[in-house]
Each structure stands twice: as structure tokens, then as C-alpha cells.
Length: 144
Image (cartoon, rainbow, N blue to C red):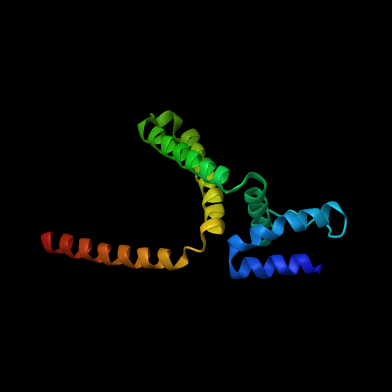
């Protein structure tokens, strides 16, 4: 494996945002033919990460933050529209919501690359939600 690819993988494992600094060097080596282009396999996690890193490197952090905000707004609009529609268009609107969720998820994955892993925060929030649900269930059972 070429040195730059190993350095990129190591940097990504240590701190995903730091890997961005290596992308210009990688792209230069690809252009020079010293490194083969990595295969694009969107279903494969490694290929997905490379695509997301490439997007951030190509468009820049600020642009991707703006796109993230835009995509979240589109998801909000799709959900509101889905709640207002009649029964005849439910399938079409559900499909639109799923599409917007996919767009937001892709942007959130890029935000994790930029800002860092969110696993600790997610675990904390899930634990808090679990506790709140227990409290609500307990109160509901007491009242019924």
C-alpha cells in the first residue's frame, strides 16, 4: 500500500479532521499516477469515508456546513408536508422524507468528520432518554 494511503488511514483513525490535510497530497499523487484511484463502493464503509473526505476537501468546511443546514431544512419541510397531506399521496411523501433523511445523514457524517466523533455524546443522550422514558412509564402506570 502506498505510504500516503497508510498515512491517510492512520490520520483518519486518530482524528478524522486531521486526515483532511493529507488529501491534497493524495490527489496530487493520484494525478501524477503514483497512486491508483481508490475504487468507489458506496455500500462499503471505507469507500464512503473517502468520498465524504473528498467532498469536504473539494468544497471546504464552510460550504459543507451550509449544505448541511440546507439539507436539514429540506427534511423539516418534507416532514411538515407529509403531516399535512391527504391519504392519497402518503407513499410519495414518505419517499420524499426518506430521500431527505439520506441527504441529512450524509451531511451529518461529514459534520462528524469535521467536528469529531459523537459516540460519547450519543451514548449520554440515549442513557438520558432511557431514564426519562422510565419516569414517564412509571407515572403513566401510577395514573392508570
